[in-house]
Image 1 (cartoon, one colour):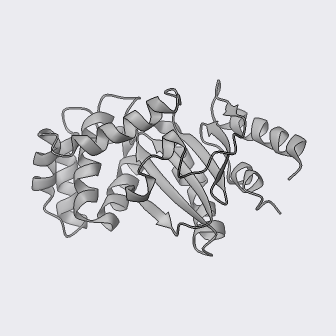
Image 2 (cartoon, helix red, strand yellow):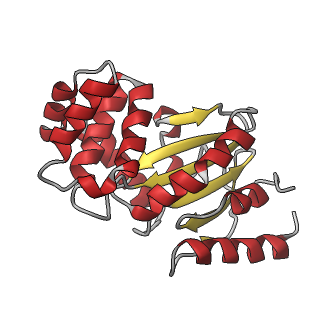
Length: 217
């Protein structure tokens, strides 16, 4: 990969997504050893492990995370995940609006029950962000899960209120803190064939991801 070309693309892509974000130099650290990836095999994932890994710390209340999910993840899915070249791993990281905290508890309670329902709820939060606040998010979550999935949404909401899966929530927060990632979401770490390449913040484009992973056209 032409490093100069990658840095040019990354700078353009990140600046276009969110102001004030940046990247980090490649360390050669394995995804198995990187602190941000601790326990990554147990996290929500699309695509198969064994190739590249796109590890994203995302807040369900974050506008830039929603933009990343809407504009970048579909290309990531069709070009890298479906062909079996990469895995997209999500760690929830509630650092933006207050309703992201109970929403993250609900996401973990959902994931513990059903992976497909997790992704449905995750996308629902992004698609309807303006409808939520800290007071209504769990009631609206229960209604969505009851209507759109096979889960008992009221039980999920109750677990979220009781922070029944707080260990999973704290594991993601600790992973971010231990890696010194900061609080500008989304935070996307890229591992090329399992080796750390770079970290970018904001609604980074698919082209930047592909270039970093050696998949650019």
